[in-house]
Amino acid sequence: MINTPAYVFNLDILQERIDRIKSLIPDIELTFSIKANPFLVPYVHSMVRHLEVCSPGELSICKANSVPPEKIIYSGLLKEAWDITEAVLYGVDIITAESPMQLDLIEKVCAANNKNAKVLLRLTSGNQFGMDEESVLACVKKIGEYSHVELAGIHYFSGTQKVREAKFEADKNNLRSLFDAYKELTGEDVAFLEFGPGAGVEYFDEPSDDKDFANFDVALGLINELKSKVRLGIEMGRFIAAPCGRFETQVKEIKKSKGINYAIIDGGIHHINYFGQIQGMKIPEIKVPAKSGTEKYCIVGSLCTTADVLVREVELPQLSVGDIITFNRCGAYSITEAPNLFLSRRMPCVYVESKELGMTLVRDGLEAYQFNGGKKN
Ligand SMILES: Cc1ncc(COP(=O)(O)O)c(C=O)c1O
Image 1 (spheres, rainbow, N blue to C red):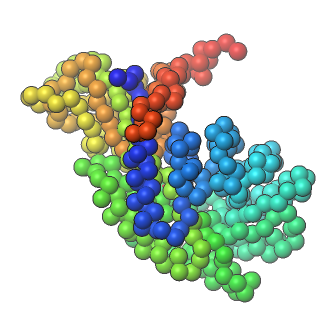
Image 2: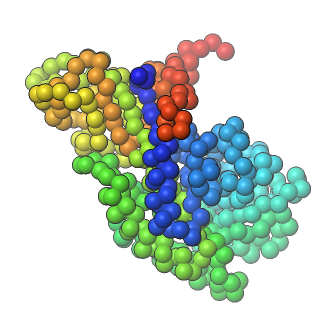
Image 3: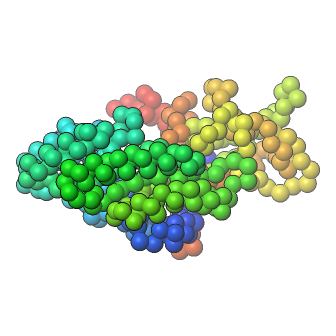
């Protein structure tokens, strides 16, 4: 019996998922982007080549879990001298530069600390992240003048939940243009590409691993093409972590109003974040106790907003107060992106489970009020 609301992350499912991904890209270095679920860090780092770490806080999580520095790619849009220093002193394997100024800062930090850094230059896909091709090439030239920074390759990510071929076609064009310009400038091929394909996960209408891997197939076209040109690292968060997590929440009250059966639960949209879910209109994978007789329910959380609807209408075996509803496929981004602090309700417990560890509590329910002015310093 676990305390609800709770996330449960299953490490056997995580390992199976990674094994299946690796079987499709056996000679490619796999990276887990820990923003999707930092609670997996202690376990996942031994399953993959790198962890992509995007903030000083994420770096602290890695340090707290004794992640070997050679497993870390230190990434992120905003880097300052102090956190670059921390990353460099920890000895991370690679640092990404998202701007010429950032590259300069990495060189300065390394020089001040008598260290060297391998750097990936991030190519933009047309937003605030990374640099345009011209700036990347300017950085390539500039690196020649630096003595503490070595060019390791290119970093590229263009968005999450990509399932359409056209998106990968745009990636292909961006990368091809840069690769050609790089060759013209240096006479060499790009040595290494760390590529985040943003492969799509299915959340609604009877999702399955096989449907996910059909999505991955679309990304594989470009991955295989790139693989023939450049040494490749593939970084993913959602596709690796989504299926290993479930969210368990308890029915606290059932009330009928204007003909609708509301099941009020101790979880809500501040805990679960399914990409593409709008006002509970789509039905994610849920499990409830088996009982005779069915009823239509609207499953809602307790936030002070009409948006706190997890499922607008679903036919389920009759629910009772105290029943546990399990929402599957919550292993990525729910724990990091859902707005836990709204309404100062208790944050969920976090458990990991595996055949080896059984069910283990890794974070007890945490009172959110203390972050919202309810705790005197
Ligand atoms: C640079 C970078 N790499 C990888 C990822 C992970 O994306 P996904 O979870 O879609 O695999 C992100 C997500 O924001 C990202 O910004």
